Length: 166
Image (cartoon, rainbow, N blue to C red; front, top):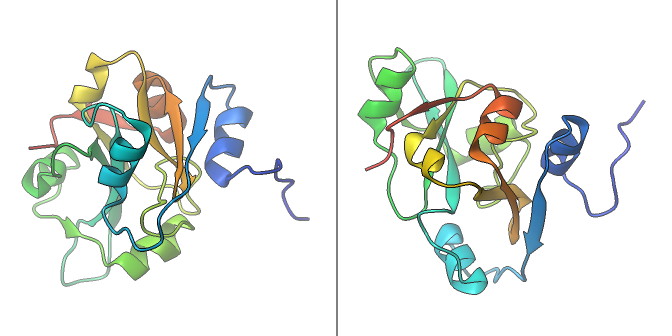
């Protein structure tokens, strides 16, 4: 039996609703020519880039069978691959192949949410998120953001916090 989907909802918003998490969705018209998704979000919505977080999938077993994990970092910075590897007890991490990330998450690049992924993965949120009452991350679609408390994001994804951005 197929899962019921709320109109305009995504697996991310459905998961947040099911978990009883308070959140707000903000949408904008995504420019299909734009490839800097986080920068577009910040510019179009006029948000602080330190409060808008991007979701990146990493491979903790580069060169071997993929062992994926999720890093959530501010769009104002970059993911520190050594730091996320250390946070997850791995020797090394590389960014996952975009096609692998899309298959695993069920989302398209630029719309990958840390919430409601097809395959739940170990997740680390940059500790800078704790400096804000709420943060923004993808709601599972390009041009769609969800605003929520970072502790709620961690609870619903089973994430830990660590300094993984530079």
